[in-house]
Length: 292
Image 1: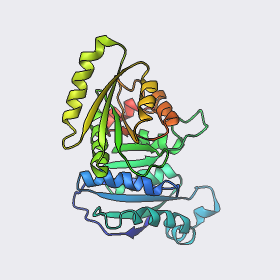
Image 2: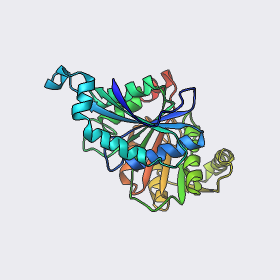
Image 3: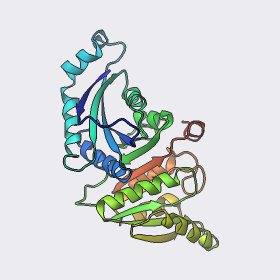
Image 4: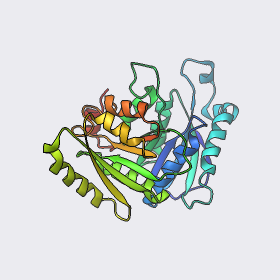
């Protein structure tokens, strides 16, 4: 159950991206990113807030409506703050508070009942060896059937002038490219394509991949870069001169092993700018690739 807030939007099949907000310091930026993605697809944004009602607690005695009414003030304020970003933007935005026994379950339920095409969540580094990106984010990346974007918000800048897109072959590369393009179009920025190679013998293949990726970025200024060395080190170094880095998940190539594995975590931890990690939803493939 939950409570609706904001603009009532059309539910007739329009592209919909959900953005989960909890941290008031990040709610507005996450919503802006979601708006960029939605605008590119003539879609809408659905802002999700979750009130946690543990099963074994005094709160379990209350109905969801009572919990929302009596204890939802702080979460409502974050929701309202996020939706205010969209005022005058032309992007339809609505929001809802959900009650669940965990944040992850609440967000997953929200995505399911509203038939969202994509989910955007924020990530802050946690000092927990048992969790790669954080317990809730790990669960969402692993279990959500839709596309998932994980954004680590970096140093706040006045705007976006350049987006770094490390390119690779794989199921998630197209999603990463489309997100990078959406951000670039919204901010009148360029996209810098990066391919990391082991040596000169991979140069021709790298240039071919960069060319094919550039073809996907119509109406956007594109520059290409080839670097030799370690993947994470090269991405972090190149990210220093860009405002946003968009990483696509792959099983082979740029990001080896799991998407929520060592390279994205290291880039997110070390890069000063914003890092967005993109995972394409694909049923059983997702469960295999992103198993924790």
